[in-house]
Length: 101
Length: 101
Image 1 (tube, each protein chain N blue to C red):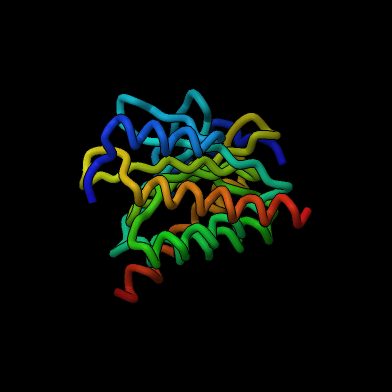
Image 2: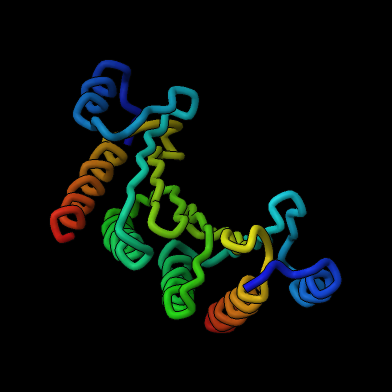
């Protein structure tokens, strides 16, 4: 898995409207807000299972109803297609939580 | 629940050898390391259930096999007995992981 070149990376970022790109780390970050801790952790559990299945894991933090996820591929030294795919998956999982409330 | 005064706080901290106290935030932090992501997240799941049952939640982050937990009581503006109790519970849960390996 190799780091995305600027052109495909920018195309990928254009499709991830809620994520911000940190050019220094070549990583993307999104903050997610939920109704409460139980919802936030249920979301994290779904992400954890996806991450484990793909053997590609997020850097993330949680404070009560907020979850912040950062994605980058350490082995590649920056953003790869695996990060972009996991970001889209996180967006999809989050959307299911949104519509459930 | 009120913030611990310096004397009981220092006594409590003496019993939490693996935690470091940030005097500025009056918060305690410990880093936990596991065999892999699955173990780290299993630990987090147990902490999450305890936190939810007690209605007292950690600030925490995870990167692959590492989990960092910070405890403080926002409503009290600092460290309370609930933080100390949750820290001990985290230590106990971690010990079970340690002995399982």
